[in-house]
Length: 288
Image (cartoon, rainbow, N blue to C red; front, side, top):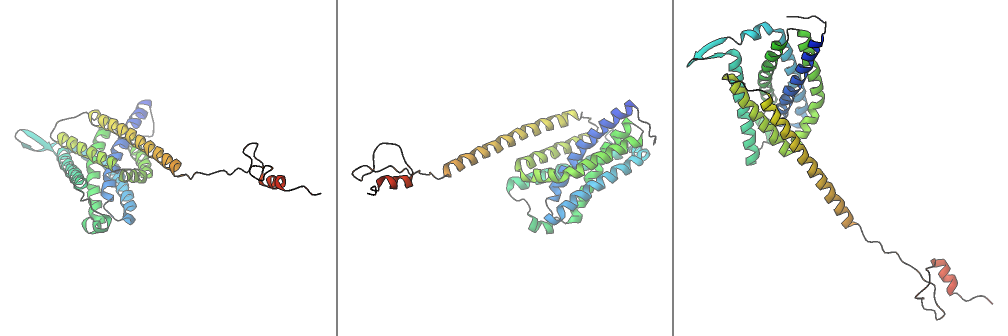
């Protein structure tokens, strides 16, 4: 392990790569934590998000410091039908299966209209149970990112700096991501689909089928852009309808015009309009 503070252009490039990787994996964490935290009462949701992300950061830093042990997880523990399974692969398979189950379960609840409310959710999803699920998925995401980071550099300062800075940004953005995901049902369904895809990806990795992450996150970015355009179009449509409704409900104001009276005492049919005070003066007889 290298704890030197000397930064070279190569280390800077590795730092930026790890920073982007941690942000991407951290967003996955935030989405999963947001979905689980929404089962809790509102008074506990912010604490669950903050504690879940903080523990994820601590776990990743701890795994970085245990890099020597992490490397041994790639050694096969047993063999089934000629296929060896290491500790890392078992964690990926179990974690991917759990993520797959949670994503399918949440999608089923939303489609069937049986989503748990906050009131009865306290009995179904306690703070401890939600936190345990968050920690389980933190372990899976952390293990994957740490193995990738250790394979890129042995400089612990670079890895830990990328982890701490990225999670500091995510801690600030977590509340906004949580509110946005839960405010838009289509975005929440899209997020669940992402988790489903990541679960399949983790299981495939566990069975030795390496899939380039570009094939996972590329379609995700495209789907997010399309959904962003849909939300923008829907917002503009609502704004136009609100303006049309405001224009239609505005009362019609009639402007009264007063004309000078003629010689017969009847209002004149032509001539410019005059002010009411001047009309009275014009109709009154002159004093002798």
